Length: 607
Image 1 (tube, rainbow, N blue to C red):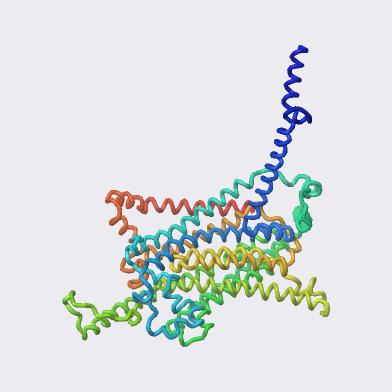
Image 2 (image 1 turned 180 degrees about the vertical axis):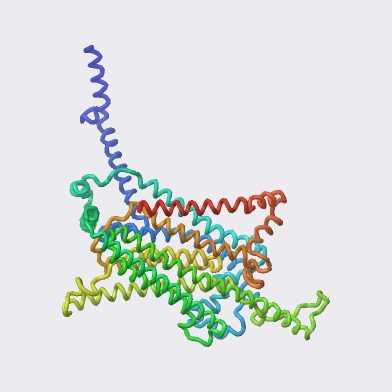
């Protein structure tokens, strides 16, 4: 036994003699310890590097430390939307706009690629370009510029097929990524009880002892303070007693006022749309800037002022801040949805007018062609065609470009309204309160007008409905994803600056839900509603006869059958025909609707 113990001791000493500070293994052990420490430092630095590579991560962390998780959740959502739109921009720019610009026929070669003679004088005016007419209208920015040639360039690039597949693929990718993100958020929610000994946990475990930067320490201190405010509000709301009868009366009154606001908004948009149709029939050139942009401006102004009115109405209800935010989101959601679909119905009426105008143009073109041959159409088809400048050729109204222009104008006007609201409603208000507070009759900081708070519900739903317009309009205006990327990029910097410099934290700071699934559920619902008008126009309305990649076809989706007929074996076309049977498509649509409904319901309950 003594010898075995001695052998074990000898083996132990030989194994760890470097740690004991003597023997031949000392240098190797010191090197091993040094490399272990360097590896751990490298891992820590690499994690810091990955965090630094996340766009705007430090800005969002700073905002969260001062304004709480509810405000930070908006900027996280904005960053996620920016990533989605970068993918959509890459698809439309790389597979539609660039191939047409590089391999398609150049400007001036076809009537659809040429500004009409009557518009040449004003085609480069700033007012015309700002209205996305003139040279902007006859460019790769809009549907009507693209040729219906089956293949273009030396690569034999199939432009009509690519245009159709990119339009369908952007919607499919959006559905996939939204549902996948919702599933991942639901899995990350997990379980567990985080309410037991809440204040003790915050008091003794909140500080990060690895902080060595003074600015980071200040942000951490502000973050802990904000988390205590959130916890105190949660505790107060759980113990609050209220007069139930008075509360019910005030909540019924608030809902009645909200319904009146929604009805008035819908009637106003309906009235303005009818006026715009009358202006269009009489000729927009006879009216000023406001009459030409009345619909877009009214919708933007309603989106700016109605959320503020809903915020005033919600003060009557005395809900918990998180529940109040949910009601606010629901009301603004109903407002934007009603406005958007009123706008779409008006567009449908205008499309029908354009289709009637197209029939007249076709008849007039027949007469015009006959006049080129001295009043008679030659029976001999081998006669040389008469050369006519593309700018002088009559052309149809191209309703697809008109739809794309309307969505682009609405997006731009909404962007400008948002920026002006930040500069006037936040910045100039903060400057006035800051510098006039010393010489005013009352305290401007704690009285009227005071510093503004960040409007979470209005900004979130503004993002969601702007994205809905992108999904609806990008098929007819491939430039829309690029415009939205620019909007989101500038909004991140401008709103981060406005929040930190011009806004103050809410008086009742509250903790946001564990994930953004409530926002995602609304986005999924808007995505579904946005696909309906686009699918209807693709399936039911004939494309224009002289513009766009699908001109000459009865329906846009015929490009698929044409490709199957020319490029695939006959058996593959039969299989595709069976797969596209309505008996298979309708259950898929019902499954998609059910998924959207369940996701929205579960997210509302968890929120």
